[in-house]
Amino acid sequence: MSGKLLFRLGFLLAVALLATTSCGDNCSGGHGCPATNFFLEVTGATDGGVVADVEAVLSGPTTIVMSCDRPGSCEYFGYVPAGTYTLEVTAPGFQAASVPATLTVGPVQCGCPAATLQPSTLTLSPSADQDAAVGGPADSGVD
Image (tube, rainbow, N blue to C red; front, side):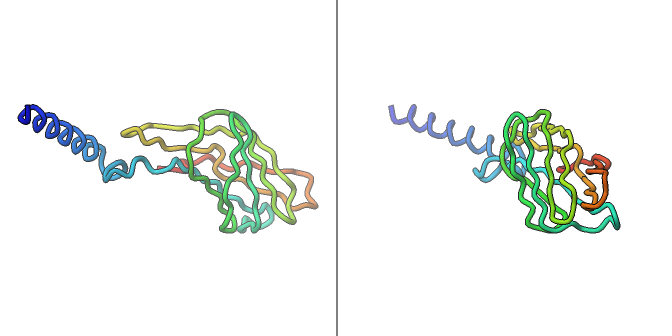
């Protein structure tokens, strides 16, 4: 009986070791997947400079409030559903922008998803302008 028990324990340990080392650094060490993340860069239309005090919210399959702690840069870390969203961005001295956005999740490596926000850049117009916002060229957001 003890031989069977030792075999089962050894087998389970071998399977666990293979599972944690077969996926590379992103999923090894028993830490699981890193959180899905994506980014948004926000600039001003007048000079292309950094915009301070940005607030960015995605509304769609779920509501996602992005963290905009650094001027001109917003990010989100957490698990999110892919889909079509409305991106609403505000900043003092600029017109509020509301633009359609797409959040793509994948490809999945080792069960660890990556996300891409389109557009990943947004240019805000000053409050005096009549144009609300212009979505910039899409880029990967996350590698």
